[in-house]
Length: 130
Image (cartoon, rainbow, N blue to C red; front, side, top):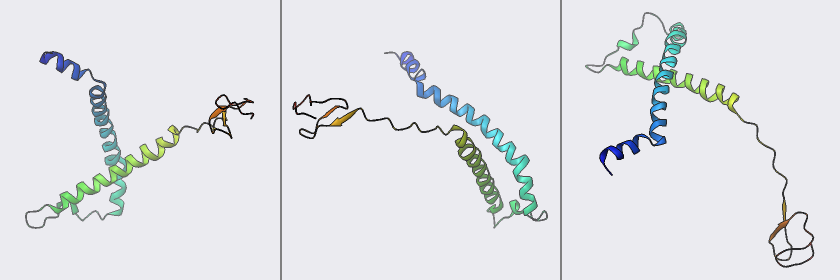
């Protein structure tokens, strides 16, 4: 098998195409979540934090502690929004109703313990009367 054929077989596998679609959709969804957090959630955070504190500019020597703290807070807020929207909200809409348990169609023979049809009057394995 030539390199071209192997590469074509690799690309045409379902999991590679699924992964490519997931990356593209994930990137687009990431932009939506970032816009939501920047436009809706972070303005709410400014009401909680005092406006005159520039906590994202904190430094400890040459270490930019504020930048790490800011990225951590942004990550936690984005993770919370994704959890609330995808897991909780969409999970309620996507929840399928459980199908009722099916009635049994077989029973156990008391003599040989084999499964026989529910309406049978004699066991097909040991021929005992049921």
